[in-house]
Amino acid sequence: MRPGQTIALTGMLVTAMLAVLKIVVGLAGHSTAVVADGVESAGDFFGSGMVLLGLTLAAKPPDQEHPYGHGRLEILSGLLIGVLLSVAGALITAFSIQRLGQPRPPLAAYVVGPLVLSLAAKSALAGVKFRYGRRIKSAALTADAWHDAMDTISAIAALGAVGLTLLDPIRFLDADRYGGFVVGLIVIAAGVRVAWDTTMQLIDTMPDEAMMSQIRAAAGSVPRVAGVEKCFARKTGLRYHVDLHLEVDPEMTVRQSHEVAHEVRLHVMDTLDWVADVLVHVEPAPPPAGRDVAARLGGR
Image (cartoon, rainbow, N blue to C red; front, side, top):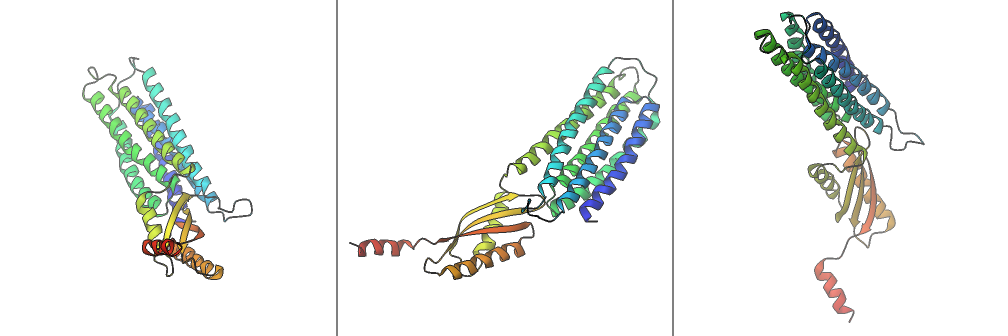
C-alpha cells in the first residue's frame, strides 16, 4: 500500500471513532454543536473513503483506452469531497436553525471531552495529509487535509458555543445551537474551496509560474537547445503532462533534432519528479537579429 493510501486509511479509522463518539456523547449530553460536529466527522469518514478509492484507481497504469493513465479519477474524488462537504454543511446549518428556541434538558459538561480529543486528532491528521498531499501532488489528499483543517476550526467553534452555554445556561440558552450553525457554515466554505480547486485542475488550468519556469529551465539546459518557444502543462492526476515547442538549429538533420527532443524529454522527467511525460515539438530557431538583417540586405 502506498503512503497516500495508508494515510487515507488511517484518517478513516480515526474519523470513524471520533464521529461515533461525538454523536453518542452529543445526544446523551443534549448538545446540538457536538452532534453537528459528529455528523461533519461522519462526512469526513466517507470523504476519506473516496480519497482512498481515488488514489487506488489513480495508481492503475496507462492502457490503450487511457494513454494518460487514470490519474484524473484522483482529482475527481477530490471534487466529490468538495460537493459532499457543501451538502453536509448545509444539512448541519439547517438542523441547527430548526432547533433554535426549542426547549431541551440542561447541557452536560462532559460533552467538552470529545471536542478536545477531536481538535487534537484532526490537527495531527491535517498536518500529515497536507505534507504528503503536497509531496505527491495529490489533489484528493490535499482536499482531505483541508477537510481535517476545517474540522479543527469547527471543533473550536463548537467548544466556544458549548462553553458559553455551560457558563450561563439562561443567558446563552441557544449558544450551543448557534455553534452548530457556525460549524455548518465553516464546512460549506471548505467544500466550496475544495470543489473550486479540483474543478480548476479538471479543466486543465496551468500550474503556477514557478513550476513552469522549472520546466523551461530543465529543457533549456540540454545541449543543442536554442530555446523554448511554448510550454504547456496539465495535471492528469498526481503528476503533470507537459507539451513543449523546442527551438533548435534549423540546419540540423531530422535525426539530430529528434535526438535533442528525446534528450529533453528524459532530462525534464528525471529532473522534475512531478512530470509524468513530455511531448516535444521541434521548431527551427529564428536567426539572430544581425544575421537576419544581413540576409535581407544580401538579397537585394
